[in-house]
Image (tube, rainbow, N blue to C red; front, side, top):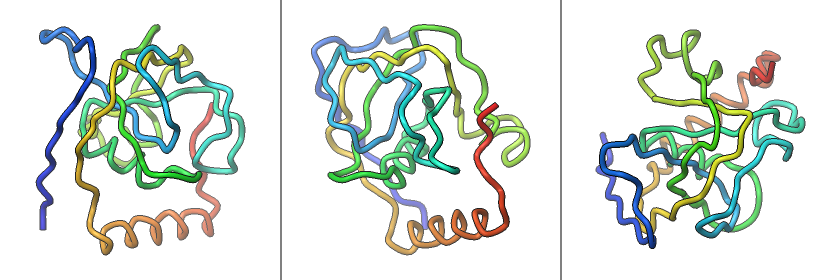
Amino acid sequence: MKTERREDMSMETAPDSDKTRFYHGTKADLKPGDLIEPGFRSNYGKRNRASYVYLTATLDAAVWGAELALGEGPGRIYVVEPTGPTEDDPNLTDKKFPGNPTRSYRSRSPLRVLGEVSAWQGHSPEQLKAMQDHLARLRQLGIEAIED
């Protein structure tokens, strides 16, 4: 069953309408103007210090990020803009989803928070449990996040 997603974004300055809107899902409490920078512990793999920050052009991928992020507090989704070059996220492209249908990217440069998506609907408890079980199986198989 596909879940309908609704997006309400309250922010002072909206991104240009001719630009792609990018999202970042997390549990961090951020404000417009804050920077999301590499160097913090990753939510995935061995929890090494992340060399990249991640962003997506789909709300659904950001929802997964918010739901699966480690930490306390509610999941949050931010509208962000990259401050430097981006590249396809190899954890979700080519090997898993050829052609990058999730429109997932990474950058070594910070992401600037433009605003927060104030209303979004998460995945069903069954979908979330299935994803968590899948990630646990990958860990048991020794398949870790690509952080080259």
